[in-house]
Every structure is written in C-alpha cells, then in structure tokens.
Length: 319
Image 1 (cartoon, rainbow, N blue to C red):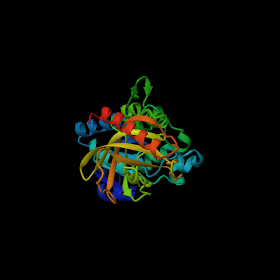
Image 2 (image 1 turned 90 degrees about the vertical axis):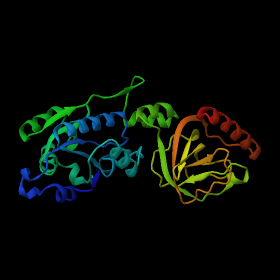
Image 3 (image 1 turned 135 degrees about the vertical axis):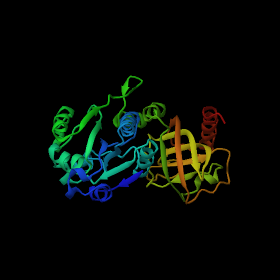
Image 4 (image 1 turned 120 degrees about the vertical axis):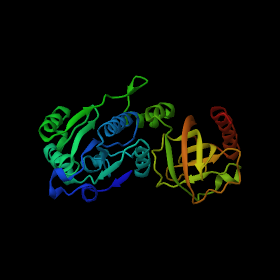
C-alpha cells in the first residue's frame, strides 16, 4: 500500500493536475474519518476493494491527519480509538492500494462540497466511484449529504455507492458506541464492534518497579502509546513482543495504592518473572474485563487480589 500525506504527493505519483483530468489515473475512492476501522469502516473498504477488482481502477482511501473536531470543536475532542500507525496497518491488511492522509486545516474545513469535489475527488483523484457510509456529509458545515454528492457526481462523472450501517447486539456500530463500550469496561462488545481484539501498542518503559518487589513485575507502556485505554480496571489479555504472545493481566489506572501517577496501562505477564521487555514495542490485547480499579490498604491485600485476578484470567484465556 502506498501512503501519501498530501494531494501534491499523490499527484506527483499518479498524474499532473495541470495537464487535465485525463492525465490522472482513475480511481474508486472511499472517504471518511476512519477513526476506528471498525466493522462499519471495514464494510466500506470491502466494497471499495470489490470495485477496484471489478473495474481495474486503483483504490484510494481518503482520511485526515487529525479528527475534524481538533479544528472544528477542539473543546469536544476525544482521544482517538486507534493511532496513525494502527490505522495504516489495518487499512493495508484490508486490501486498499493507496492511503491519502489530508491535513485537516481550517482552509480544508472551509471548502464547499463542490470545491472539495473539484479539488480532491475529481481534480486530484479522478474518482469514477465514491463509496460512503449512510451518515456521510461533505463540505463546509457538513452542508452536502449523500443526495447532494450524487447530484454533483452525475455532473462531474462519478457514481456514489452508499453502504448501510452495521449493527452488533442491536446497536449501530460507530466510533462513539465503541468508545462508550470501552468507557464502561464492556470489552467484549467493543471487540465485537471492532471485528477484532482491541489493542494498545507502545514502548515498554521503566517505571517505579513496585510490582517486582511484591512478585508481580509489570511492563509499563509509554503514554505515547497508540490505542484508546478502556476504563480504569484490570483486564484479561495478551502481551505480544518480539513475535511471542504471552498471557497477561493488564491494569489501567493511576496505581493509587502506592503512588498516584498519570493514567497509564501496565501489564503483568503471567507465570513469568524474568522477562526483560524494556525498550521493546509491545502490543496489549484486551480480552475481558476482570474488575474495577481499587485502592488497597497494604501489600498483602493487593497481592491476594492479584492472585485472584490471575486465577480468573487463566480460566478466561485457557492457560
């Protein structure tokens, strides 16, 4: 998969905009925030790849370098469900040929739908088909809906395919519904809506090493890690490092028993005491929620609870 971070990069590879539309390779395009690559997004991508294979046009997924709320509603901006590298790997795994990441600037946000079509969809991408979700809006203030985009497409030479929403357990799959599930500890529902196991990926860094003193060493994941942290608590899951998958207990929170520190996730690899993961990139998979975070009166109470957590996690993971 090719990754482009501007229209200029894309045009330099696939055609000279100044030479006219006929000089640009035609494409089938899907466009959106794609802030989770959940089942709904996967359905959009699958249709885009299907049309790519059917028509011979190259496929392009158009997204943004930040959530539009970062510019339009900065006071309402939420942490992303997945990071930039996670998104890239997921999109690539689904068969898209080209990923175009547009800088979401005030200038881009101010474009009308017609201007965006002329500059991006037709002018730069020579789109012959555009695949969108049921709630898609385009242009300044979201003024253009799917019907409006279809009218523009009829004039500018592209068709519009609308993909129906996906439901899981009677709920519409969306980034908001997944975030709500993670915020309530409903990992199983979030994973079902993602269509995969939710992960946090980051560098293992040195911490206070308190866990090691009580027989439960933990890998502290950098706060620059990618992947939304679920509600504070203990989770059954897996830690993957150097291609090896270890059963693990993940703890999300601020560790109030010993010292209140900024919110993070730390992971204890079960039945392994001498594992050196420092400065390695680790992937944490969340399988199930065990219990909420708690403050303990002493080391003995904490150790007893950890033993109970690990017994539950082994049953869940089958180890």
